Length: 131
Image (cartoon, rainbow, N blue to C red; front, side):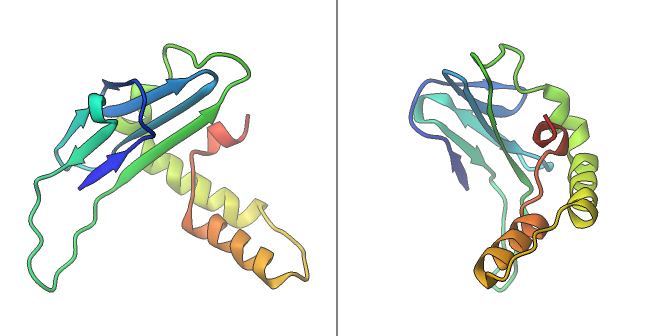
């Protein structure tokens, strides 16, 4: 399985494939225990190998980090501790905060459903969103 970033100069650090362009930082990585290999020249992160038997499924926890800074992306971005130790707790904290603190009132069913899908299906890194 491969995760890709837009083609450009990428680097590998702490198991993440990182792309910094101006004030925008993007990174992809594996949040679980699956082996992975960064291929910065192709802007790809290859995950595996892993086996899936016919009729079965597999879960691969991945992470996509995206952040827009007021100026250049800091050299230390992203923090190695984010993926290695803080991700599961951060995701649970984000789900909890979105469920209790985020709401939208609208008569537009499409907007309401889109918001709910984002709120419950796409939890992000809460400390980053709270800036």
